[in-house]
Length: 406
Image (cartoon, rainbow, N blue to C red; front, side):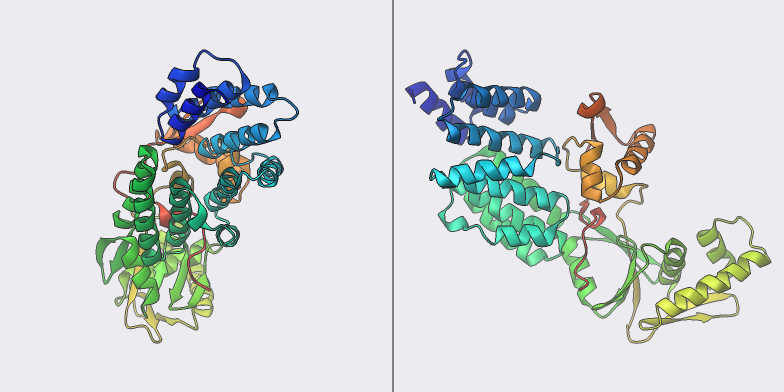
């Protein structure tokens, strides 16, 4: 490897893509193409970066398997950044195995981190945690240690373990200073903001206030009866009743929870649950049926009592009833939660992350675009969607990952 290639590689490792391009921008040999591709990726031109890396992989000879494997890993990282989550995992596994066979453990570990980060993005927390445990950050580079701690923090945040997340982010901050790469420092800082940003609205006894993730964690660990409008469950400590597939029942439970300890008039319940402007006898009959169903589902946690003017929620053991609501009530909040990371997503990647059909995601995106909440660029398979982050709010509770209810 000549001196210019070596200098360009060192510049990229230090987070200086412009310094790398100064050395190899006019060269067309395989190593230079690969380094130019990585530099363009760091500068944000992902399409050009992908083309350069593929050209480099074709240009490397049959005996340069390690170099081709590194190109595959770099292309996988570009796919992760551009939220192309359907990239071939088998190709990445083969590249990682090649690097391990030839003793390049640093890049092999990086390939594993890419897969773990993809699992975290799509909400496969258990599998991500299992694979992360197989990696030893002590023997890694400072940059790899930053990624390791960021993944730990990401899993902890999604599981609402804020103490563990804060500790991991502190470790990541120290490793980022040691690495001296501005992009990593910025990523750690951005992740840290999640812990201090408003996460939800807490409604109790008719009063409402904004809470952060640590307060949400403490609330779910308390003995309060929580009507969780972020996950559509009713819970007390470790007893959880899921109403995600019973929207009418959850609307009724939320109305009762917001009014506690007072009751809610029947006409108000009819208007909220059935969207009827005026309650007639058929609505009242249906309300009695739905309240009977809700009473049966909540029997371990509370009773639903009929009063003179309506219904009231009476917890069995909990000293209070609270409602945990989204910080901002938006339609298609889960889609917006993913787009709020500031990256551009394809509809197929969103469908994979949300575990739903691509057509459902496309309908949501079209509706959000019509409301001016998202925008797209590109056409066909290259079409991507993005939106500015919700200012001052964390979207953790909007992401479709299970809360610690087991």
